[in-house]
Length: 321
Image 1 (cartoon, helix red, strand yellow):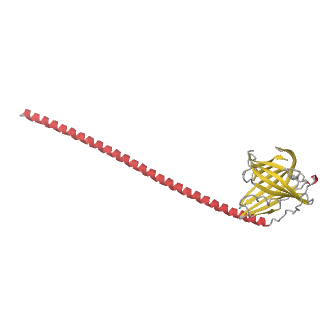
Image 2 (cartoon, helix red, strand yellow):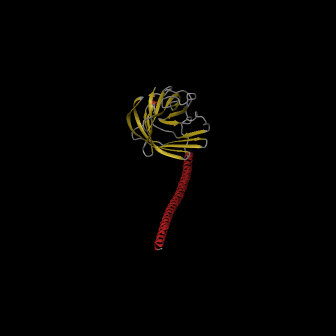
Image 3 (cartoon, helix red, strand yellow):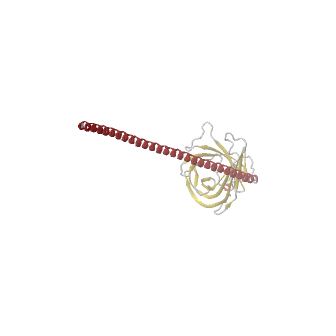
């Protein structure tokens, strides 16, 4: 009997142990599952937090960018308003100045005239003579050319006019439009040893320009120009429809007499400088022009600078015949 009881106790203990192990295994598995779920939950929560943080940051960044763009747009619009106001002010000043510019180009007769050498000013003075000029940028690259031809010289000893025809060419010396070359016209009036540049006909050949008015005091260069001599101011006003253009040349002075070498040859020139100021539709620009003039030839070389003294462009005489 004791043996049976002992055997029963052993079996029972074994069963209890087996059950305990099973329960421990289930408990361990439950703990593992709990830990895993906890980790997964923590990871998911962290991921959600990260995602939420990323979305928040993205929205914050977008809001900041939008605010920055709005601020920049507002600044840009204000700059446009300020620029328009400045343009209106510049145009009002130019209009006021234009109203004070008198007509000063002398009148001349229409009869043909041949000036004597003693009358030569700083322009060619032979009917039929042709000059070709090249224009270069500030790096010396040719950008365009122009062929100027004297079509007629009229008037008399007291005052005579040199009529020019200027054909605009490309950088290779070819007309920009072969079917309808761009030809401009202008004239130079010589009176009492002074040279007046009259540009009233300059825009006559440009398509779309019908209502054009031009006047001004013109550029005056004495034929007896000397080093150190100051020159009169020149003003030109041009009105094309609603577009107003005012140009002025001030502080003119003969700086030197020197030899200048260009493609057309070497010429003895008077070096002349002017301060320039132009207002076109309210947009103002300032600069300096230095030009080398030779008697009986005219412009041999010219350099344009901005208001800071930076070279903008150069024009040189390529041929003279």
